[in-house]
Length: 330
Length: 299
Image (cartoon, rainbow over all chains, first blue to last red):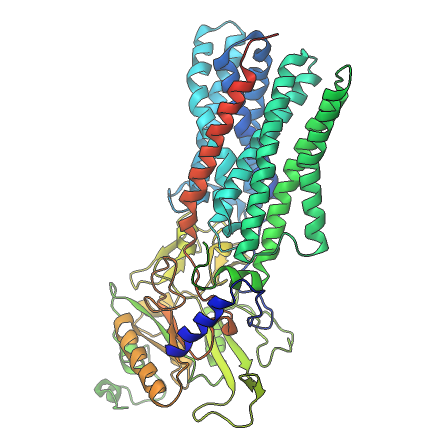
């Protein structure tokens, strides 16, 4: 094995140089996932629903009249998870009639198995919370107790809903997703919270509620948007260090990235800054900002998925990621 | 090779039925449940005849695919997939050390040929990813996809660090090499190993195969082929990052990337805990921030 070890040592000296190593006719070394629009739409919906439940629970625990609308709308929004998310997943299966086989086992090494049960628990608990809400509005104190009891585990499941999809993508051999697992999870979590806060803020304004609640949600959204922007930048830097260039290469990647970052972070922050600078606060600018956050969140999921699938078809990215050079960071 | 005594019991050309424990005669190994079996693919013996591809397709009744010419030397199969479970790689090495070769190596021409297959990893990422339990470990220590359970979620596809398994668009399930599970149950060695005319593909018990492979590597080194090494045995390239070892391992004479293999792949499930814990911690932090921003005195 002497020759191979010598070759490995030489590669170690060149680890910072662009890879000029061999590939097999430029053919992919791993396979891209068979997932597209249905799955990245689900990731967005799951994060939004999960984080909406967190916000609704926080609003209820904090109390306060102006937050009551947030509680109600958050609990309704959470139901998007089971109502829209589950059909999206079932439709994505290549043999949808066997969707229930997901419940045959629980496998802790598989985020898809973990997610099946997170989605199930979240659906059940959010359903109970909303049921309690509805009964409580009709005057049932037992209903109010049900909502108050179920909402905390529902929020915990909601936290799972917001980030397990990142673990799902990271636990693959796709270079873009495997290169920076922690930062991908941070990115997805922040995006989920931003989307939920923006959706609730928008819903509040559309429902004609007083500005105060929506403005607080806007601040939550901006904090989350800033977090996502930081996590995203750090994730891309980590990918570049690992030799995975999928995000920066190619015109399509640039368009996707621009759309996600501009809409997701640049536009909302700018709109809120303008709104704050105006002598009289408007409703139109924050509404536009909320819509931009939602569109940006959706586009970011699409970018991660499609750029990831493309990175799987780039043998250079995969071989850089799986090189055994000494000192290479995982 | 000495003739097995039992071979004399079956001299006729047309057999009435399968020979009991036929693998003893053809591969020198008795197949019993509870033991660990795999492939040792010695690429220095491969002549690129593709008998393994044909035998695999015929035995498993796989549909034809990749019918076009690729221009990639003699490789028109392109890669492993749902309908291709053996794939022969062809690499023509025109130069050695940057200069065009003007002489053949003592034992082999300047061509690399290797029959790629599912590696049946000891800690198979496809198995660990499968949420339905369709992918399981058999009594022969191989990895098989149960076709009556798989619902085509496709998670095994990006999980595999070697790009082996694929979901078929025709029947909606994931497919890959089964190491001829049905043949093993009948005492027959896998179709590709039986068809291989040079015994480049050797089927047997893992311990025996490791021993045989180590002896072969030593012999090649003695003959001047110092680049020969094993890929996929415990501690070797390919069996890295928590994968343990590859039940189907290889003897290679060039860098793994030349054969479209990763040098140091990793077990995908290593990344589950870091991602989940960081994600949940971020959510906890965001929840605190949200509580601070939503709460406070109402104006």
